[in-house]
Length: 140
Image 1 (cartoon, rainbow, N blue to C red):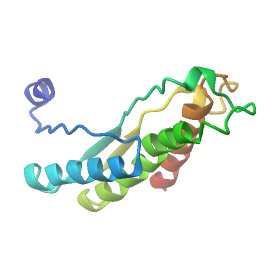
Image 2 (cartoon, rainbow, N blue to C red):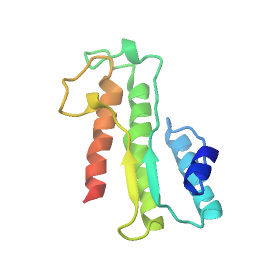
Image 3 (cartoon, rainbow, N blue to C red):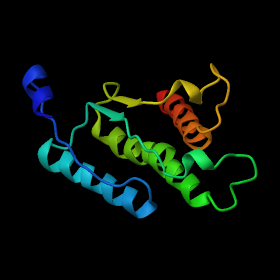
């Protein structure tokens, strides 16, 4: 944050949190926007969703009939990527100047139609692909 502030003359605030559960995501989003409203005058110029996550069971669970016991992990990836993007975007948009705001979602080349699906990237890949689709919808 300090490097960005000094290099670009902007105000930067960082907030940590857990996006893997509904409760954690809600708390984190509320904390972020409490900081935005309290320290940044309630204004958002841009938002970058760059969350990264690696679940310890990812490499041993695939969309091959082994998902019955893995829906908690599936839900964590859904929470971190598409659900968090929507939660943040919905709070950002009213705080952005009309036509001036930017929302960026960092994805991965393995999530789109440009590459073949890869085993071991099943759950994050489909969650990030949904996030990419949401980004296109918000851009309309």
